[in-house]
Image 1 (cartoon, helix red, strand yellow):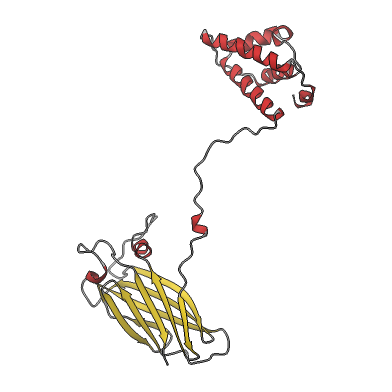
Image 2 (cartoon, one colour):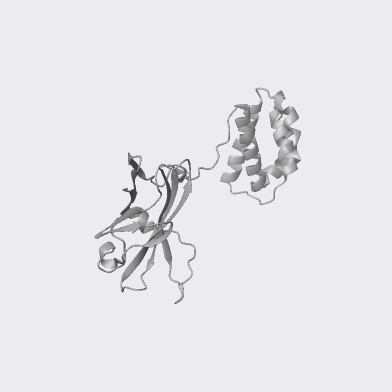
Length: 257
């Protein structure tokens, strides 16, 4: 069919309109069939493109076309496609929901770093209520095994890096249910240090301050590893029913001397 498409002449559209009228009249009378024939569609479309009167040129095929609903629909689709191609038009694709790519632009808030002098600096992290709620109640959780009596669930509240005074501090704030206090959670600050350049001061000790709802506590971090904050009562960070977190948090890490 494609080799004849350049031989389009003014009779093509009248021939197509005549065919469409005949098919419309037939459909209005309810004379429909169910079989299809791809080769027949190609032959008829080829004839129409050359301006032939297919009712005279192919009387047998034309009668079969008028008796076959599926064949008629296939022919009309083929003609519509060819007409659109000749007019340099693209057949529109089905509309699909717009893909949300906002996650490509979302970034975890970076720490605010303040250099006080060559020996003192301060880093501050903040996590919003929505971010904290998503950690404890992810909206699309696929699977989470039930904790056993030997293994309590752990939650990472933040994990980030801070560069100051020639060193990179890898910081992780994690929590779990307290094993020492009823209706409370334990929070641990994990720190590791790597050298980025010639150090301008000693890496430790550091002071860490955690603000979370009605809870505020400060600890001294003497060295790398895990340091525990005092336990956090659930009443300080959750609603009365202990069902939802009600506040975001901030963590301050400071080299004071």
